[in-house]
Amino acid sequence: MLNCRQATRLVSQAMDEKLPLYRRLALRFHLLYCVWCRRYAVQLRLLRRAARDLTPESIEPDSQTLSLQAKEQMRVRLQNALKEPPSSNG
Amino acid sequence: MVYFLMPEPHTDEAPRISATQSAGSPSLAPERWVDEYGDQLFRFAAARVRDPVIAQDLVQETFLSALQASHTFAGRSSERSWLFGILRNKLFDQYRRQSREVALTDFDAPVPEEQGAFGSSGPGKDGWVARLAPKAWDTPEGTLVHKEFRQVLQSCLGGLPDKVAQVFVLREIDGIESQEVCKLLGLSPNNLWVILHRARMGLRRCLELHWFGNKQIQKTSARDVLTRQPGRK
Image 1 (spheres, rainbow over the protein chains, first blue to last red):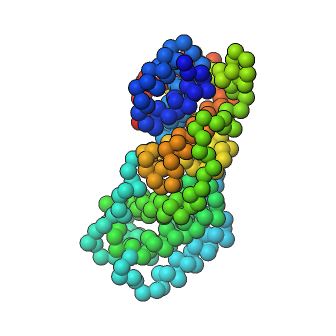
Image 2 (image 1 turned 60 degrees about the horizontal axis):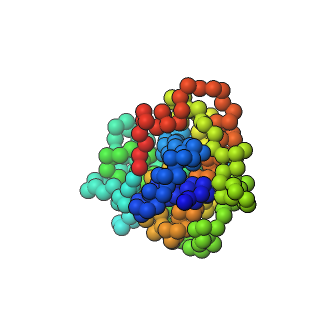
Image 3 (image 1 turned 45 degrees about the vertical axis):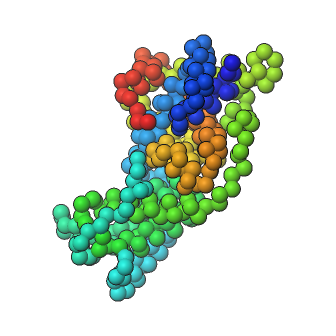
């Protein structure tokens, strides 16, 4: 019989691949009587949905930015590259 | 999601690099790139490589490569998504360059994120310790897109060890299949499962501590929210 430590690992693993039948059955049986692991499974699915809703746009604009110095350096390098003759092979 | 398999857009269109971009034109305006997209690209890269210096270099390389490949810009996608596509390719090159060493190999060994969560001896050995067992989460509609919730999630993600967070971002935020993540980062499937287990265990606990544990009583359970809006697999 699975204990909760094993069950939580299988709950996670099942999100990434199909478990062997005996593992699936053991996990299902464990979840029947363990409310904490049942909650754990539901909450991991919720975490997955929350993570996939995190787009670059959802990140706060001022949370992490390039330094002014870094931006200036990039501008200069871009300007220099613009002056160079265009490359034919991209 | 398979964006990393997609080549950068191709076209037979002649290069059009302009100093000023006219509305609706597929021309590019590199002189605006740094101000307009620099920070967005940097945040995207920094969340994935977890090193601001490398992230900055990748953004710089992205701009220079974009300039060189400007003739491939068809105008079918926006300038922004075209630049993000180039950055993604740079990121995948970076993953391949990264160290392939990962110390985690034992799938059954305890991991730090489990610390204190399970009994260590007696009849409750390896069962949840009641104090740290998952509590019922109240998740009213809109929770997952709530600005503050996202901030808490990102802050929790920031608290994970670098490698653990990186794997989680690739698998769960970018939605890349497990096998592809293993290939990209040179991980065995066992290592991947352990790392993802660590990430999920740590993030779940962090969210419970910093978000769900502090919220007022709400009517909807996590299960209800999931049933209403099925997630991607």
